[in-house]
Length: 468
View 1 (cartoon, rainbow, N blue to C red):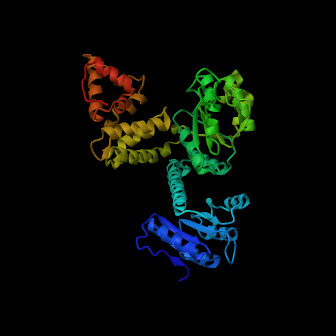
View 2: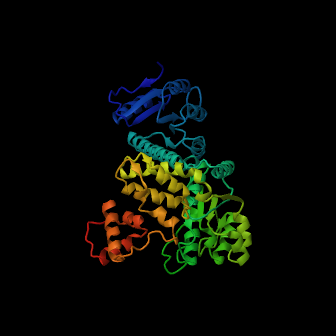
View 3: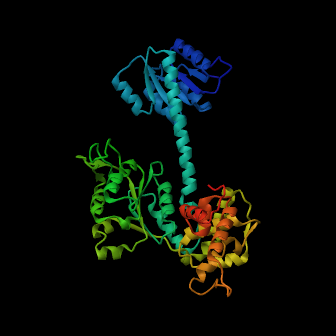
């Protein structure tokens, strides 16, 4: 077998290396030192044997001599990269120069070491290269998981209305600079579709940055979007990058774009047209490459007519409009969504609910769903928390669907003998706390209350419990 291997029987798992150097003393010294340090080392005296070894085994790092008897290290480097695409390459040479260093790095080398060198220096550089590769591998796996979790294929829907959405997204997702405007009622999943667009396109490796346009005041929103220079205003103690700059190379999701003030719309328009901006207090233009995805539940045409939305900004945003249909227009997807949410909450709540009672499924299909998919998800979460068997029933939703369906129709009538409203409220509060194990946010969701409202009622009725 060509090549030389480490004499160290431990080959202790730090990584596998290939040393390619025509000087036998260098090969022997590196093989011994790196083997003792825990690396699995092979060595070759020339380019031909190095390529032969690369065809037979995989390596984490290849140490390449710049001058070899049958080729230069620069000539060998692309061939090694082709055979070992995951390996890091480090160039070693006695012919140290800036030109050689630049050429090596352009050719794909991770580092450049000049002779003479110490084994301590080599080991330090190897550790840095391996740490970089480890982080890159973790980041790649994380991105792959994100694509699986948020990709378009993960959006539930087989109805004709959703198939139109999928077909349109599939056509535009590979165009990284196309501006996309997602429109739809609250709760239809605009934020989920924005993530799917990001992770399904060529900018998936970049940041996925979300800006809620109603979350901050105008002055703060401008700083959040575009950043600020040190001293730009009273609290600007240091320079801060804005979300636009953070999103460079990825996607900038502008949620609730229809609620942005006129003052900020002009600055956003300039950025959309030129992909250039200035930090607050800054004097120079900065440029980024990002995909813009905006979303709104507002009637933008009406906003333009009323003067609350600039017409030029509207046209700049409305390049690729995507309409997400409300749930009442895709009722055929309800069983699929219910199954999806049941699987999700079975994992989260460690339950084994396997089916939905036909009566409940009929009620789910007939419900108007003003809160759309978000309301359906909350309803299934409530039912899963309360369910004590293997089947979800109407009782598990606490009459939520019937109350909404009959709102104003006189259902849930006051008994002839009357009732004590405080006692009813307290009883429902105790039931919700018992069903959720004292978890205030979950108990609140069962009752349509937030955590603070639940806590207020605990104090109001003197309920003492180990709640969280």
